Amino acid sequence: MPIIGSLAGGSARGLGGLRTFGAAVLATGGTESTDGTFNYHTFTSSGTFSALAEVKYAEILVVSGGGGCGGLSGGGGAGGILGQGRGYQAQTLTAGNYTVTVGAGGAGSVSDGGGSTGTASQFGSLSAPNGGGGDGKTGGSGGGHSIVSGGAQHIGSAGTSGQGTFGGGRGAGYQDNYASGGGGGAGLSEFDHAGIIGYTPGNNQTGQSGAGGNGVPNYSAWGSQTSTGENVSGTRWYGGGGGGGGSYNSAQGGTTSTRGLGGNGGGGDGASVGSVGNSGTANTGGGGGGPGFNNGTRYLGGSGGSGIVIVRYPKTAPTPKATGGTISYDGTNFIHTFTSSSNFVPNSAFAIHFLVAAGGGGGGGDAGTPGGGGGGAGGLRSSVSPSGGGASAQATQTVVANANYSIAVGAGGAGGYGSGSRGTQGTSSLINGSNVFVECFGGGGGGSYNGANTGGNGGSGGGGAIQAAGGAPTSNEGYAGGTPVVDQGGGGGGGSGSAGESDVSGVATFQSRGGAGGPGVINSITGIPTEYAGGGGGGGGNLNLRSGGTGRAGGGHGGMAQNFAPSQTGENAVANTGSGGGGSGGHPTGGGGGYDASQAGNGGSGIVIIRYTA
Image (cartoon, rainbow, N blue to C red; front, side):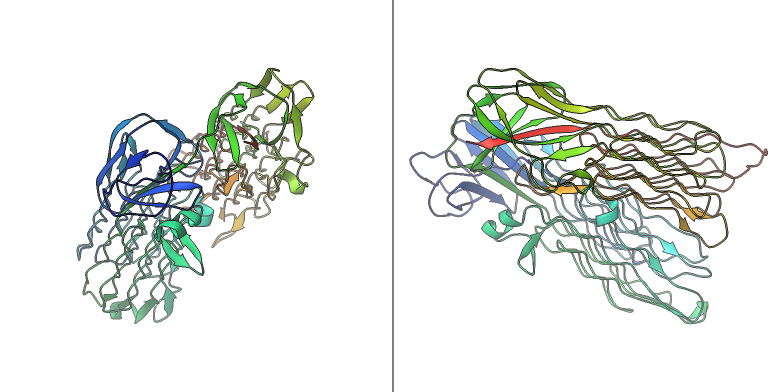
């Protein structure tokens, strides 16, 4: 779970006011409120959180300011978000003062270089990454690319792994292109949160600038209690990307593109031709919307929305019935989260719910024209629906008093390097002790051209290379890896929620995008809906900057194929997701007639979560 802080007790009071929620005053600072179970401190501007006594099981949501846009219309990236259920669990805050910084949104501009990057928000030593500016600037979430002539594909900028997505926005056209990309939304997976590609088919035709990527709805209950976040049909969102602005250019035969809308979570809408961009919504971390470029005239890009910090903690803090891992409390249940191998020791007998995800497989390497396959997700089993591989929820287990239960958290498999180098399978995760044994198998490695084409078997199968079959999954744990059909792009690794995608045809024969990794399962065992165990993306095949497939649930993105240049490496998966690594991108015969070897991404380590009633 994330780290958020809250008070205990009755009604709310304004900034800095002392508040008694029940018998004791636990903390002051921000706007204070309670839902009867949790106390909340909401900071819409910088201040101080003062813990007057020890505050147990505090969770903290930190959203940075969104990025602003420049005069060439690319949407601004959302501010990075800290506290998405991975990496930062609930904490005990000792008595004392904690400085809270709420980051400002980046300013819009009329320049060709993009707007300003948003500034980081911070709680004590915990900091979320910045927002991305427009026109491809990096940050918590990447900015979308601006309008570009010439027809090449221009990739939006990268986000921060685990805390923001790739911008995803790119200009893509067969001739001269004047469509801009949307900014990335805040989230773990590019596939679900990336800005949309802007596209114009050619001269004297109408195209579409990209929409901003959606942010995260995971903290909707917090937003409802604190009246923050963008309300979309009753669900509260944070961290939406800004939409790309519309454009018109008479020099290109009257090429026009329609504006893109902002993503859910406060992303500013792109502007129509001849108008200034719309700013992201305050205190959401939304990216600014791109302005409407008009026949050479630039307009002011939208500014990013400011960030927010929310601290939440339970009004009462019961005593856990076991030791081991990082312990959090959701108001009803204790949750023990294991991100490395350890032991779980109960002090009495009781029933447990569990989620076990194994390490993801490494992506397939490359030293030729075809891209490598994406690594398969680690197998996933859970007693809280959904479980992996389409299985029903597993039965709960009963632990006995004072028994020592071994918890193994599987490592991710290594990515392959060069020709014939299939990714390594991830290792198993398990719970093992008196009356209890739950094990999941590591994800299969991605296939590699020239001798190791097929994807490896595992919890979920690795993606195949050069029309070879994807790997087979383990029953009730995951799905098969993707099998390429166009020939050059790598297949996506299988996920715990669905199979990996095949490669996707490009403009010309044998020029194909790598297949996307299969999605993971979205499971709420921690109380926060979180996606686990997605497949890695397959590497792009051959020429014309064929892009790699997107990884899912923190899976690595496949590398991009490059013509007469070294291929991009596949990306590593995010730790403790159980997701697969990205396959390396293909490479044609280069200037010297040789093939350049490239590195595929490593799989992400697994995770084990145990929950029981307090």
